[in-house]
Image (cartoon, rainbow, N blue to C red; front, top):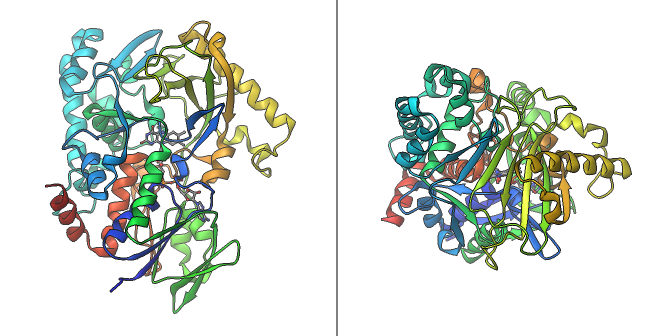
Length: 498
Ligand SMILES: Cc1cc2nc3c(=O)[nH]c(=O)nc-3n(C[C@H](O)[C@H](O)[C@H](O)COP(=O)(O)OP(=O)(O)OC[C@H]3O[C@@H](n4cnc5c(N)ncnc54)[C@H](O)[C@@H]3O)c2cc1C
């Protein structure tokens, strides 16, 4: 007999993973996705035959026995992915004060590479690597522990990145280098909790991978698994309203007027947008006010470049470039200083790994920079917006050429996006890159529970505890754990991969 009906709002990674887990458990799953393409940040677009990712450059923890490998095997998606492991001895190349530093995979190599540059800091680096590993171990679902799925050890959350590094060393160059990939979490040194830095860096040091031929393969594979399990994934279905019966959601309504009856709902969209669809008296003021008042992480300006044929070698690593003596660029930059740095990577294509066909360059961009066009829509924002983007692209290319001289000569054509693009494609407020900003001095406020004040509505996705492929996967397990029992779910995951 089929179990309850569940409607999942949003076919991003979080919604699709919940759909896979619950459909596998016999629930009658329907995912409603507003866009033509599923995947949210895993969506891609093509220009001149080249596929560009919009929000997944590389991912972590996919080697045998590692955590994302286990979750993806349980869900049934691991074998469907075409993965390329990044360079073991330098998957990240961080340019800081015109010097390049490499992050390696594997703790020992990671330490040795950096000791070459910081010979007096061996003990500091050993401590850092141990600390990020220890902190990751404190989160049960990062280790598939069954004792308690809840995030334990609140004191871990309360340390900001700056507090941790100030206690680690006085060597400001080393601090900057270790935080040189902060674009991965849009970090603010005095606000972002150190656990976010620790989990991300620890899992990438464990292993770092690119998806070959585009991130949409992950989303499409997950959607297919839901369908194989008897569920539905419906596109072009924007949810606009909830219908309530006795304080519980009995149906959701889509923009085209269709009504979907349900026993419970999982919302994969930003909590603010979820609450906007619920009338005031169904959710208490305090909860609503708290969610509505939260800050979001900064957005990105992206440059998508088609390269001239055989003009630029494929790089099996990512570049992070910082022009200043500080690597932190997400807050308080002035128009004149922009861009303060960038992330640059070549896309992995199954056609050729000798030469790159395309490149993506990312740089932080505040919503304020594009707010004057906020009442416009994709492709209809006007000539001044096109000109703005063109100027930004050229400024960014000037900086790129400091790292890769004459890079412009290798470009066939380029395309751009701003935080407004993300706002309109994924619905994330202000085009934030990673959703709600986690703040170490306001933990209880900024960490979101999958449970809500409505008995039969749950939240999932990057806004709960952590963004990124790993963070969203953990969130999906937490959310589904609320529905089917977390101990039961963790045991099933463990049993399926034994
Ligand atoms: C530029 C950029 C680069 C990134 N790079 C990496 C990386 O290298 N590695 C990594 O691990 N992570 C990366 N991330 C983060 C990662 O992509 C996200 O954290 C993750 O994909 C978010 O998944 P989600 O399901 O929580 O949300 P989303 O992907 O935002 O999904 C939400 C979905 O809900 C849909 N939706 C919204 N409103 C409605 C509605 N009313 N009705 C129906 N559907 C709706 C949206 O269309 C979307 O499909 C990057 C993000 C960005 C922006």
